Image 1 (cartoon, one colour):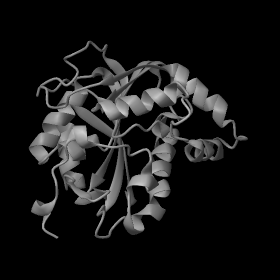
Image 2 (tube, one colour):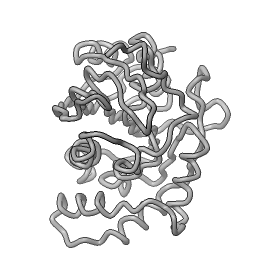
Image 3 (spheres, rainbow, N blue to C red):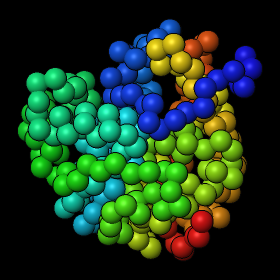
Image 4 (spheres, helix red, strand yellow):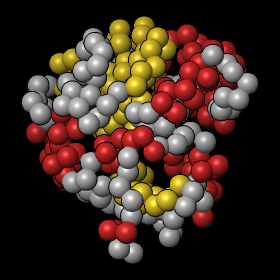
Length: 264
């Protein structure tokens, strides 16, 4: 398939990744919970779910109005700020935080957490505790040199980011610049928990096919080092989402320590 036929991703067009099965089509639907939901929850639980990463402030910079990736880590931070890229996602998240009747039901993600913890299901308690931990849900602009320039954020002890860099970057130079913007939100000695995609090509929502930056493991490792990060862990999961609607080869998770500042 000719990549030039794919639409360029535009942040203002994004609709909720959280409501996965409602928006994705084709044979990939049956793999979404395992690859898109369980994999991040398991990885974050492994590196942070017993308080291995803690601090005052955590910033979440992820695609779509999803909260499941925060479940293993939120209780170890006093303050959580979620950054989103369009009004729709901000609205969806605020509806969830306010427990409005039409907000998305995250029971399946809460059940995965209970399974990992080996505890009885206490979804409502955990979900309500997460709601209380989130102090801000803000709209940011990735097209700006510093995409949080419209408001002040203190440097975070941890930044958690899922898939954004592969959606907003046309090529590896873009990925590098955007990663440095993310780094700018993080304290020296802070952790970046980064999810992305190796050798991805496209995905489809509704009738629109969108571009994904296709990069490989070595390139991402090199870019991380150039941005001042030391990679402490890199995990890879093979994807089964490969048809004419979505083509992903591998998901990756990186736990990295910020050792030096990098300038955009």
